[in-house]
Image 1 (cartoon, rainbow, N blue to C red):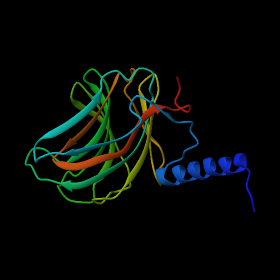
Image 2 (image 1 turned 90 degrees about the vertical axis):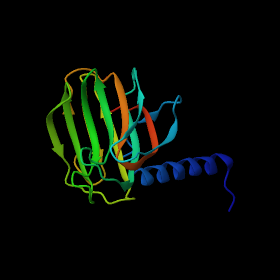
Image 3 (image 1 turned 180 degrees about the vertical axis):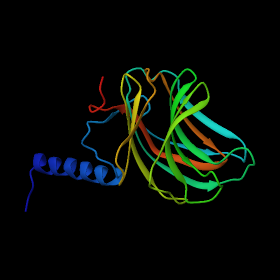
Image 4 (image 1 turned 90 degrees about the horizontal axis):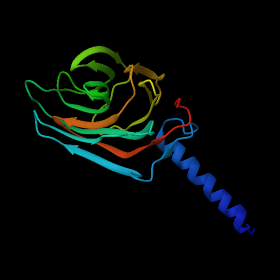
Length: 194
């Protein structure tokens, strides 16, 4: 059976979209388009106990969405600082954090969305899902103009917190652990309000 180039090309595009949708673990029909400036990157933090590493975008402009798979490979021990792998959505000192964390320095890891104002925690929403070391956590995150951050994790209902003002910057952080965002993609989603 011979396939025309057009039919074969259409079949390949559909196969790639199907594989991309399955691999992400979260719904792909939200119209997400990654920015060409960063594309699909891997960001890996391997931080010593009591230390942290971070990577940030200081001006997100019109970007409003992240798609990534988070994974923690090692947790360390420090008397003051718990292991954490996080994404922060910021405006000055105010921030909404999406975090994988281990308060007792053991697994499974907890998953939460937290809002801080002037470095003081105001609100926290804990997800039911827990995570083991080396386990993939596909995540879809959108934010609106008013600073509402909505997180969708596979097999969980969406969780949201509002900063109450626009998101100006995004920070990725790892502390007292080895963790990665692979792949990390930032861009625009049609489902987030503009």
